[in-house]
Length: 356
Image (tube, rainbow, N blue to C red; front, side):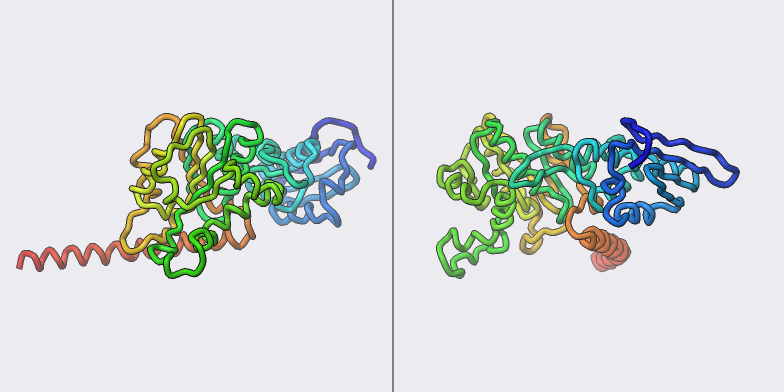
């Protein structure tokens, strides 16, 4: 591919009265197919994301449009070239996430976020895919007790398990303990067929699935038999002191405040705890309060305890999942707004009745 050799994308702006034309020169060492995608698949994504006109000839990209948007497009191509230089294969998801990061004007560069390697296993590398995920991973490195609160699909549990496996492989801990409340079973486990483990197993299956992505499946039974990896319901944590362990409590929104206190006080020497949950999906019966909803107020200000909030922008599942999360959030917000005046009228009515 003809073009100038260089280590970085160079952009040249030519001001105009109505629009700006920016010329971007891609270093000749990089394949334009790798940058723009097969049959320009990635270029089409970029074109749809911006109003500016983007024209490619050889290794030169000309962008015509508003100056501010041209600057973002130029920065995007610089980030994509940096990703290629790091050995990252560009995908539609990586391009879309890079666009979102640049538009949100976060201090972190896409090339910094999308090249953080957590764990390489079975031919794939696990990395954060958003700024908040990167901050979550960094918080796990820096703190002893970490809470990750956010909707489904934001990588709360998956990244925590990856960090746990990384810590085990680096001999930072001697074992991994994965737990979650089997709240759906309630007090009705006795009516289900099978042994206790067979009854509880379906509620722990998501944790097994994450492990199978990161550890050779054949070695998991051996590691569990030796106690190096333990997957158990939350009730099994009572009365224990967990030393030199990486402990993950999943689905923590389904703990009561008492259960949350019980779990957190299991922390032993040389251990790390990650608590994950979605406060919008509480399955506790009746008016039972969620331990995850109140724990921030209780632990606020305690050193070495960190809270990470994830949102729909961090969802790494199908694109529709992010849209569904946002739709439910809007629905809940509208319902809360409409319910507030009704509650006020009820209180005033009850007050009049009390004075009658």
